[in-house]
Image (tube, rainbow, N blue to C red):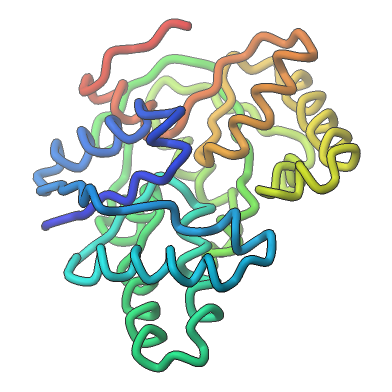
Length: 252
């Protein structure tokens, strides 16, 4: 299968290890992975701030870049949700690009959901071995792309990793307070929300927080540092890659 990678801005700039993990896993499974270099931001920050015309320009670029792709995979539920939920809204009065937007949404998949829903993989059967005590931050955007049960579905996948000790976090469905530009518009509310999230993480006594959305990772990890709580943040893609021996274990 030929798969095009939509890396996203934050993964490309701040968390490239996640992108490397995704590529290594897909290639390990026998797929050809391509990286269209013309890809840009999906436009979510501008869309959330109300700049619809500017977002349309970026969205058209993204649609054109991936128009000939068979499958598009991204490590971000947030950016996948932008394409699934909002591109059709942007082009509701443009029949040509509305059709293209629907086509892109139909073939765009968040990475973990691609493994489970499209490839029908089970990590236990795949032989993923990884040692560590971890909890998981439920991403709001999984609900945005129509995942039944939200983060609970990802937890089921996490539990398939041999050797991983999973600890359930309290109030799992509660937002971390990032919400893209929400954190900048309402810093006091956002700060209170993430403080509560950090306290819930502390209560798990986990050594790792599995967080599959880069925006949430930036927000929660920053708050953990300010609170003096030492915990490692990792994506499930990195765990799978490490557990298959495709990526060197990172001891930080």
